[in-house]
Length: 192
Image (tube, rainbow, N blue to C red; front, side, top):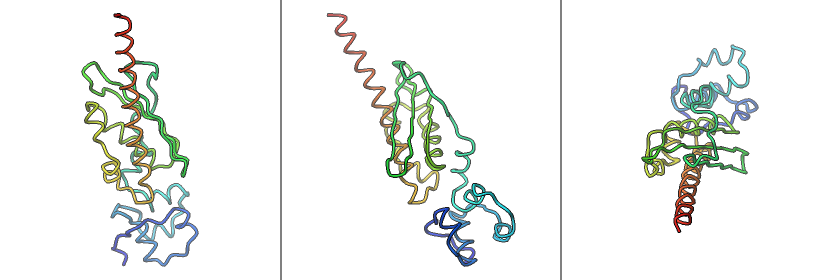
């Protein structure tokens, strides 16, 4: 039983409050076959709540993007070369702002994010900014939440985080295209 992999990760609260048998506990702590502390050290070592949750529930890629987020910050939202997407999930309270900067050839040269939410939401937006850099607008539009979720090994209960990241990319692209369309209309009016 100790070597098997859990099909569904228990919530951190469940891990802390539920009475689990030793095999169930070990299975939950080794979710997605990720390296974790040995079962004995989990039971004998004093872990802070964040350490405990990290060791038991999140894949190492999520932890990496959470602890070392890439491209955090903001770009000039008034710039015509910057598209801003702001999305939220009322059910869980996560809010994600993703910005892209596009060069004259239509390639995304920079991306930044700010996210208020859980570790999976932060990791999803961090990964999304890495993936959009260097892509054309059409290529960035092809990034799907399923790709983000698969890369981060998100459990089903956290799939909404990858959906937010996809929605943020789409919103940023739409904002950028709207700014370009407005510029074209202004140029036409100026020439008349």
